[in-house]
Image 1 (cartoon, rainbow, N blue to C red):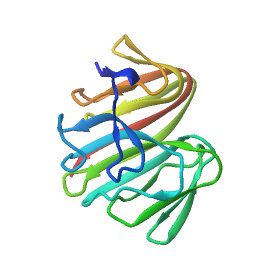
Image 2: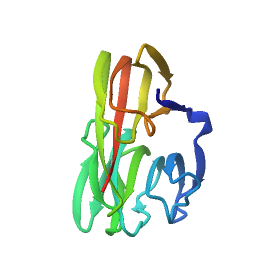
Image 3: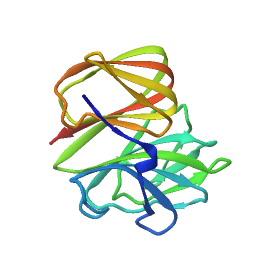
Image 4: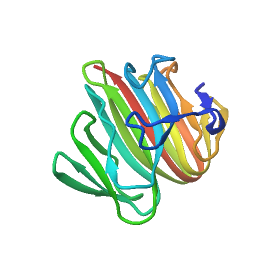
Length: 191
């Protein structure tokens, strides 16, 4: 059965570049820092235009959770991201910056160390019942909004907004997500 990572227990810390605060949801290996992790999942509030922190050797996927949106500039290529946009993958060691399109935003960041892990991030709108399959690789289900129930082998985990279910030590299995809200399924794959 997946373990529950409650939002109240997520770790708050400064951004690597000091420009804001990030909330660390999960990191591997346990106890790693922002300089030596293999993979890391976090949220951050972006209240001002400015540069993103640089993470050498890291691949990153960004999703907007709240707010009007941002225009993300990665090495001169601009992409507008909103709550409805697909998650955007880019190299975290590329020169990148964000420009707000309105109010502050909160984003979801998934990062993996290139050569050790890769990742996939999928937005899952849930309106009653959604079925997914955990493939045996480490995976996490992040509740972005609403209240969801994750059911596996007849057992249920209740996910409130910003809670996360961790499948790091679970075998391949079908999962049922019930409720109304938005989740993100994050798959971590060894390289």
